[in-house]
Length: 490
Image 1 (tube, helix red, strand yellow):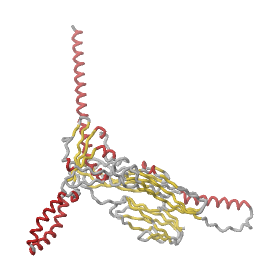
Image 2 (cartoon, one colour):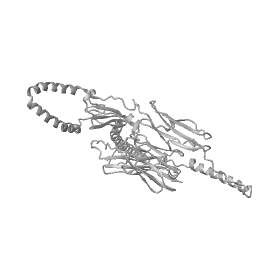
Image 3 (cartoon, one colour):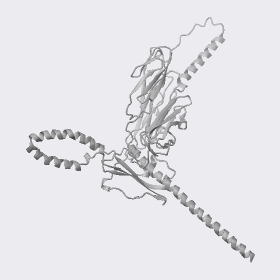
Image 4 (cartoon, one colour):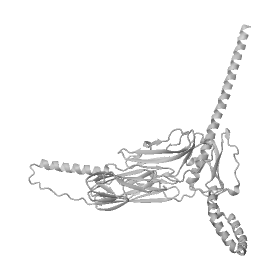
């Protein structure tokens, strides 16, 4: 009897444990699904913020009352959004252009003067005006039907619709606006006609002496669609350092669409100036002659190393999508990964790919206050040459309509070519300056010298060597970005 009771108690305990285990599993599943829903909702909002950058990169314009369907796979391909749950979801973003009240205001302002002029004419010629009224009204009707009179809208709303593993589906998924107003224009990726951009390390013209060693500095290449395509650059041409003359090194690269870009570098091989030979009749021993010879050889070697092997060329840093712009929600941090919306590559003529050395400072943490914030990128090669760049992003309170970012394109970096030059007294040189990005709103720069007694510079970048010493020529953009050229006067 006692044994039967214990068996009964054991069964009860086992049953209770099973109940608790099942309850724990159910609660765990519920909590997990809840976390998944939060992640999917966050992904949905990220897609809505990334959609404007997709249209910008693909150069798609929407007219008033038009809409466009953007597949989320296209956004992910461009790495505009990085989310660990992205592979769980399918869907699209609807970009819908509304009536642009800003354009209405501009037109109404311009129509005020037009209407006053028309009233003056009407007071003197009623009959003519009455005949013209019907003609003008019919003409306006024709214009409304003419598609060429559509207005590009800047008032665009974005709504993401996703379905993820039968756990989360956006309300209204599958519904789309009027098909007659759908925009089906080809994207930039589908119709890429823009050539890649090749940027040379060092000077576009290099001068060396007969017998010197020519070391190829190299170049980098970026494409508006394919991003960094430096590995595809083909370098052709040879330099015969034993023979005087001018030689051309050609750099060629093509993107996936077949657009080709070519840049050339000129290498001038000059005859060495012969130094006057000293009379060695009074030289006491042959050992001294040998020592002098050895010293000269060492000096020449050192000079060659200083002139052609010492790395004075700054790295080049490029962004995969030059005009990308991030909008994030308050309570989050901006995506600064090398493969993210602000994906970047840093290359050096000696060290090669130094992307891993890029340091990012600025507003990199979690931000709780809406506003416009800054990121600063710096990379330094093994020889201490540095390159700088910057990006901006906007923090908004989620749920508010997405506003168009400031159309002003700020200067991110200034590159001076050459960035180091050796001159003799009274020699002159013209500096070449490149302002990035190429579509910066204000590309104006100013020049200054750290020591104008050694080297002076004009407002157009024309340098004059005045006396022996060292001076740094600084080129400054309108927003304070700088590039330098170190001048050594012998």
